[in-house]
View 1 (cartoon, rainbow, N blue to C red):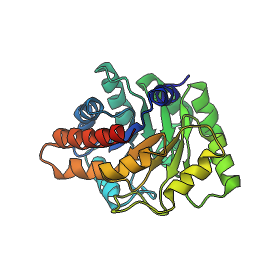
View 2: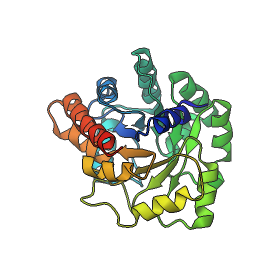
View 3: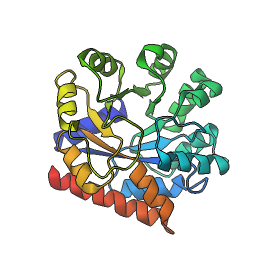
View 4: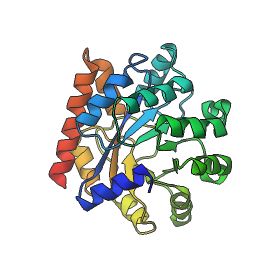
Length: 265
């Protein structure tokens, strides 16, 4: 059983929701993740999404776009992303790591090399927003050989046929996009979100994690009541970028999310 699946199973048995924060590697400084990841894990993160900076992050809103640009200016590369994952594992961080990045840098690196090096670095899964499942054969085979989960995004506009396709291709969990549009903190959740989760739940027994637009502990608690995992990205990246003490701010924000999820359990 892959560590991602094992984590969801462990949390399910204890009736808890997985908290899955997102960080942009290389932001605000090139090596910030080496202190940020331990801080958020100690604050209650069950898995961590590690964002690979890219110059054209089409699914991301202004906050993560700006963080990616800053990370690139800091000299962050895919190679350094893998190196930092290796260092974090050597520091004793054991929660699942999921790399999230766009297809172009991964293809340039070489899919077979990426699969083997990512596994060696302690990566457990990948999210590639601009790679449709129908076109992911090469990637899927390479990742499967290295026991890496390939996770796909499912839009709230998906009909039953599309839900079955995306859920069938996804390994580890299915990433439910809470809204139509790009990432970014929102003041309110979509009124249709709960129905969307229920529609997908009726068609697959794989874990369901919801992301895009979750920005407060209260929103996380609401989503945690129906989903297996809650993904928070832009709001956390904003907290990190606006604080003179990024690790302290990140830990406090994640701890507040964790407390609300546990309260709602």
